[in-house]
Length: 180
Image (cartoon, rainbow, N blue to C red; front, side, top):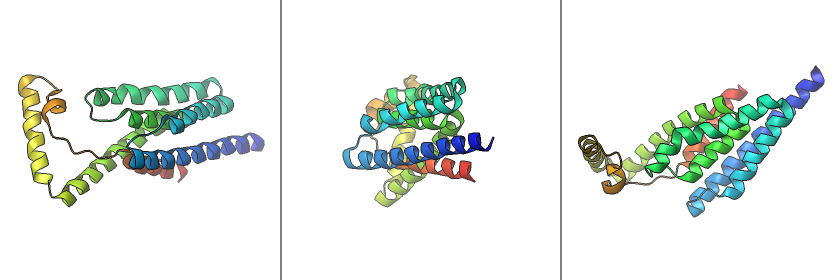
């Protein structure tokens, strides 16, 4: 019993180390190159699958697969509307492959809260909060009047923020929650 607990705990520690390395590398890559590179994400996905299958068998496969597929399903519409990048979705998929569905859902929720806070600070620091919200309101109104969700995509002036720091913050918060 104790030996099995030690092995499972070792697997969890390895998974957390991989997750931390993935987050750090992804944030650096995104901030430096405006891109989350596959060289960081794909090995993390494969390691997540391998570790979860090794320690938990078929349940581990289900855990990893659901953690990878759900972010694609939930965030695909945002990608299609060009509101989120493919690298951000791949990063969430890697987090899901490593940690499972429940973890990635909470991490995504926290990440979007942090993204909203980061965006608000960005707009306040640039002094464009009022003009941005006015333009967004007008675009949203036109979307509703024309029944065209892609009106925002085509006619709205966007302010771009990198999502990877928010993903790092949200994932870190979820990791802390799980450890405590």
